[in-house]
Image (cartoon, rainbow, N blue to C red; front, side, top):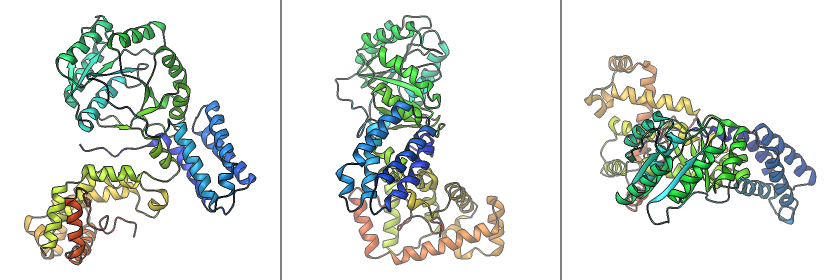
Length: 471
């Protein structure tokens, strides 16, 4: 499964504000009351600008203040770092505690009910969740829509189910939503499905009939999960609907959609606090694979500029072609020449991981600061693959034959400049030299790691291709 380059815009504003505060704190030899007061003022302003609800801000600030003024900070040899760890813990708590999410532990079919206002993205979220369950949890999933007043919504879900490889239970427009949901549950049992996802009707505004219908469907299917789907861009308006749905249904979690469109993050923090339920997934794009489990610990680290190295490792492990990595390693061990086919394979694996931008986004701020801008790196990846594609088979195998006239032809064929071709060939020579130096013990150790189930990476050994690290 090839993920798009995810944009975690939802906390960008907060992250930019807090990362600066955190950087200032880390260097402090001691933390005074003045330091704490100044930092809390900056925190409060950052949260207000992020559109976090005022009661939520008060709870968070009070929690940080109490812990920061305790003995833990005063007696520490590194009080600045301790203060940062307090911020991290309080942010994790604010977002739902360690490792929020749901486990499929009940007897199948496991029933997931999606509720929310019209326009929040429930139908597309139902399909995204189905795809995540199919690909990440290897589950058989059945989808059903009870939005009988909107035939287009039923048809949309049917098409999406086909796209993601899920089953679909048909529903008649104008039928009884409760009866449809009950029939879908029976069909899930008969068809030996692991999970049934029920997409309920939305409204443009909250009304009692909508709530009554959602409650009746919930009773009919005895849902294990009742997830409130809310638009991150709704801001403070999301709180009113969160309260209403939280009062009507015993919600188990929240799915925050359009998280790539709102840089402030206030809705995410506020809805979690108002409902008392954890955020379990973030929708971060329109494609059917643009849904990510929400991990408060890792998100808190990102907000504070610590990066998300865990996600980076998972992304590399999930996308690396282990067979290709092993083939290349064996080739180098055997003393065979590293050629432009090999380089193209490495560049394409980088693209498959979402490009440099997706990788740099997960590095801690201090590590990513000196690197090439993400967009520039991604554009360079595309150009370099295009240049290699413009070469003949013989040129890819024996780059030393590429003279001036060939370089001009390759540049014209790839829509690039001759200097771009020159740059690629120079980087290739550097990589070839590096590969030659690794043909002994280093490469054998990498092969051993690969056989142990830990891919050494879809990138050239030693990291990114030369020229991508901002040098």
